[in-house]
Image 1 (cartoon, rainbow, N blue to C red):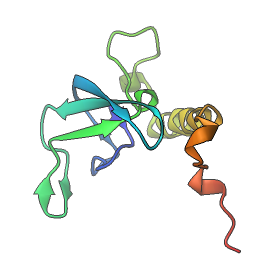
Image 2 (image 1 turned 180 degrees about the vertical axis):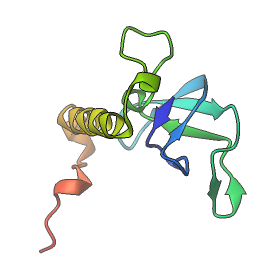
Image 3 (image 1 turned 60 degrees about the vertical axis):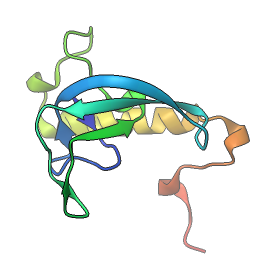
Image 4 (image 1 turned 90 degrees about the vertical axis):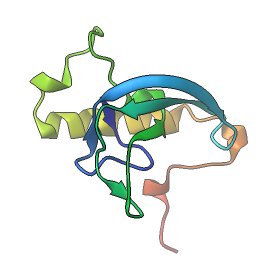
Length: 106
């Protein structure tokens, strides 16, 4: 199950299969390629059939983690926020990137 990605599922969540990994040279980290079981919305009018996202946004069915199916939408949002903050804490400083949610509007 994927939470957050580009393009993101219309309902914020999508179920599919991890079909590959690739290196993101901008963020200097790995991304996983997810192929959704069914289209999960549209992006520029085209159906979203897959996505590339960071590993923290993928929840593997059968993993030790609590399954999303037993969580409320609010709990899933909170978990996603924890993982987002963890990602930005661990980003390679050499990338020069910062968390866009903490940028000031100077």
